[in-house]
Every structure is written in C-alpha cells, then in structure tokens.
Length: 215
Image 1: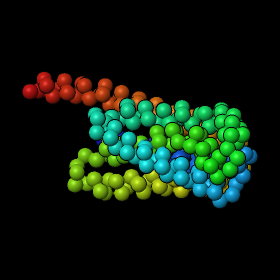
Image 2 (image 1 turned 90 degrees about the vertical axis):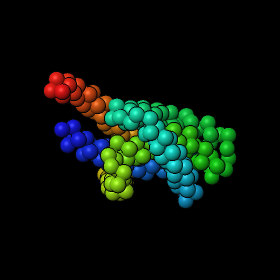
Image 3 (image 1 turned 45 degrees about the horizontal axis):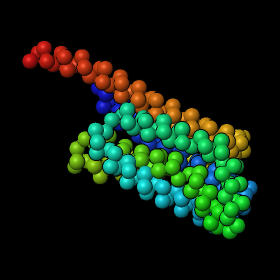
Image 4 (image 1 turned 120 degrees about the vertical axis):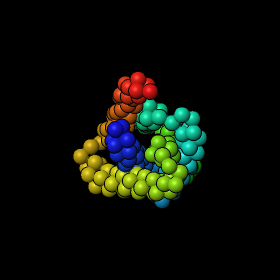
C-alpha cells in the first residue's frame, strides 16, 4: 500500500529540490551584484561553486544511501538544506563586505563569496538526487529507467525554478523573502517525508503481526 504513494512523493520531492537549487543559484547573481558587480566572471564564479558543490553532494548522497536508506533520513537532508540556506539571507551582506574589503580582485572575491554563501547548502541539496534513486530502485534491472525518470523530473523542476524565479518571484518579492520561502518549503517537505516514514512504520507493524499469527 505504501509503495502506491511512496514513489510519487519521492518524485515530488526531487522536483521541488531541483526547483529550489536553480532558484537559489539564479538569485546568487543578485546577491553578489552590490559588492562585485554582475559581469560574466561573477556568473562564472557562481556556476563553478554550484557545480563543484553539487558534485560533492552527489558523492556524499550516494555513499549515505548505502547505509539503511529511509524516508526519514531523506527528509532530514531536506530539513538540513532548509536550515543551511538561511545564512544566505541573514548574513550575506556581512560576509560579502568582509570579503570585499580583503580581496580587491572581483573575480576571486566573488568566487570566495559564492563559496562562503552557497557551498554548504548546495552540497546538502546535491545529496538528494542519488538518495532518491536509492529509495526508488527496487529492482536492479529497472535502475536505469528509474534514474532517467528521476533526473527528468528534477531537471524539469530546475527549469521551472529558473523561469518562475526570474520571471515572477523577483518582481513581487525581495531576494531575502524568496530565500526564506525556499527555506520554509524545503523544511516543510522534509518534515512531510519524516512523517510519512513514521506512518509507514506504524502501519507496517500490524501487518507483520497479522502475518505472524497466520503462520
């Protein structure tokens, strides 16, 4: 019974994680612009930091998924991601000002600032994709198909996160408000996954008891 809604839940979470990652990455340009400008090397710094941090996240998520993967741990990663993006809104100006005063070259200053602001939360969010694959794959013969569908869903979320953030959210909300919204969304999704894991375990116990009685 649980598998009927487990997979849709995981796909939905993967979609939202992709949406949030690209939304935050897109906001990076606006966050860094007041101190470092908005030239191409600023975006080069942002994209580099996100690509490197995602690669580490994929590596760590894949390793973590081999150790008793569960929706509870999956949800915990979401909650941690929501928590660790909060400093972007709370301390970005202080961090960038300190870096701006110490590093004159905007290329390296922007790279350092992007690393300080985005590296840790993006590593955490990057862990979600391989962990999702582990939760979804039940048969090794279907692993390729499952991974393909998952990356389709998460990449579609990234595309919509990019277009919605750039076309609409920045017009009606301040950057910090958008960051807080992403933080709340990720944390809420994580709590939903943790609750779903608890419900699953509670419903599975009576079923096992009934099977034991029949035996």
